Image 1 (cartoon, helix red, strand yellow):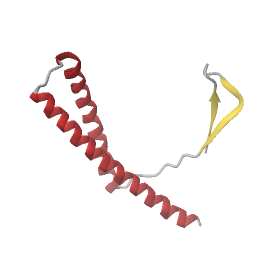
Image 2 (cartoon, one colour):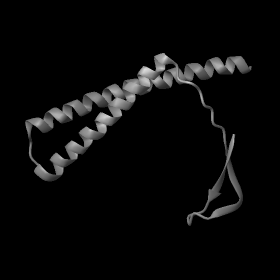
Image 3 (cartoon, helix red, strand yellow):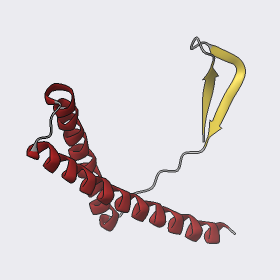
Amino acid sequence: FRSVPLKNGYSEDIELASLLVHCEMQQVLESEEELYSSCRQLRKRQEELNTQLFLYDSHMNLRNPNRDAILKEFNVNEHKLHIYQETCNRRLKEKKVSNSKFYS
């Protein structure tokens, strides 16, 4: 558990106000490491593609076959990231269920 002091709109501490946060750290299994690594690589590539698309849209403002290929790759990566995220969420729920059985 961690206690985090709350601040007002001027970043000043609010007297007698804090938030209690529960942090749970777990080791990543080798099988999960590959999944997280793939997610990391896809997110990095998405950032690069997003930057390229922004440059095409802001500077060239015309239909270009290269831009269409970048957009297609961006959409495919977005779909893969969504699938990876669903897999991660499913595994996390499975762990929570197995942990709740342990504590009950």
